[in-house]
Image (tube, rainbow, N blue to C red):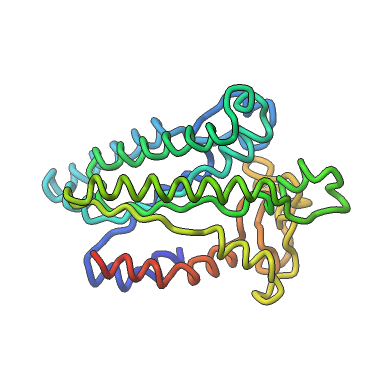
Length: 274
């Protein structure tokens, strides 16, 4: 909501639209996730999301015509965020992927699939695409709970997991730069957003930003709850703004707001170049 509010004035000046393609579930709909029982429900895979986008295009076309629809899509900004669950759940928690991939190979595998999705968006008419990197996944409450060895006592960030995110982000940024160079002459703008460092700063110095709780979520006890385990019947802390994380994976609205403000100069610079 605040993304539209804060970016809105700049976008209205340029008559741009914002299309959220938030894929923070997973790039892959792995049925074996059901055995983990946390994030298996309501995960929409990439082909399905693309089909939803095509359906959206058809509905827009029926209202304003094909030419105006294509202009609408071409001028829209697509925000893509993907990969967290692919590493936290599909790779580190469920052993199937680890039997087939080294971590380096899996980073390339995830990047390839993300690039393919961006390419598919491009073929559907998208020309302005921002792609967020991974956050410091070693600081996610669910990762601390599952992998710390002493989840009730030692709830510090686990650096080896966050290092994976750093390496993946570096590789992703290079690949996106190459994509941009190859498509720039066709009017494309593909832009990487660093979310790792702003989120890590919030976690590292959370009291500076007004947070009281940093290593568990606001929903339930905050150690494992996410997705279907956070539902209308779940306990929710009385003050969500005191928590860096809403559930065991996703930041709270206040954290997202601070993150957006940290990224605002980069976003403004990006919009200014259009």
